Image 1: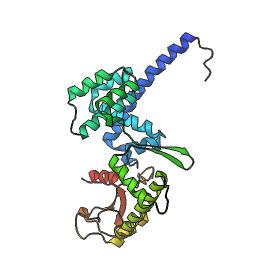
Image 2: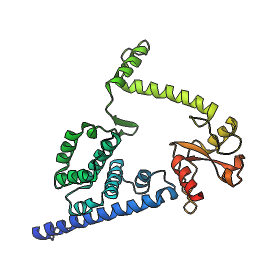
Image 3: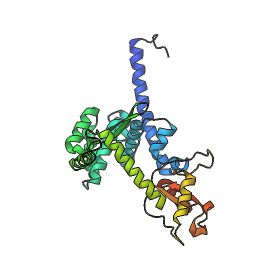
Image 4: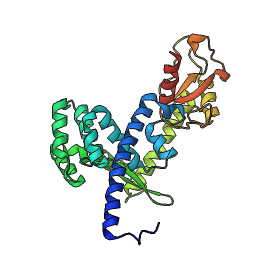
Length: 292
């Protein structure tokens, strides 16, 4: 696009209109995300979460997807912020940070009443992202504590986190225990060894129990044998097998996997191999609601 023919006034006027349109479209995007979450269309389409849907289907970065989902949930919980988002008084970044703060307060059993939440938002409207961050951090320092992983090379990931002193002491103890093998072990090397040991432990657990957790217990009838669970797990290659009927897209999530009866037990389904599949918890619940 060549804009050199535009005068300075036309260029800045056009930019102002584009910014206004962008804000309107951002708000419309949040409303569409809210409706998709309500209908759980992301699950129906074969994605394990709304975050998975945005990053894999639309190639949003992880930060951009998280930001839009958080802003959407603030709008869902407090519809009064709609005009502030549309006018630009609240950016998507600010809305995301406010939602995070409100959720942290809720989890710590200090949830703000509706009036307090709206007063907070009014006090932050029109302020820069840095100002919003500072005011929220002053209220609760935990709001600025977050984990982040980002690629820094073809086969390298930078992992950023804040750990407690108790966890740090445990890590130092592990380094001391392994010091006979590696006197100057780095945290990267320690994390690698810990991952190897944990995977070895859980792989053995899967051999005994397949799911890596508590034995699967069907609601009705005889429990699945461990050999049968192992067969289901191996057939699925440890991934969710939910498939969208039209697009044939498979979820493939490895998070919170559960063995499911394709034809439910309470509808006469058997424990036969052909009637068992591996689903993530989200798709197992999604299927269950459809059957009620």
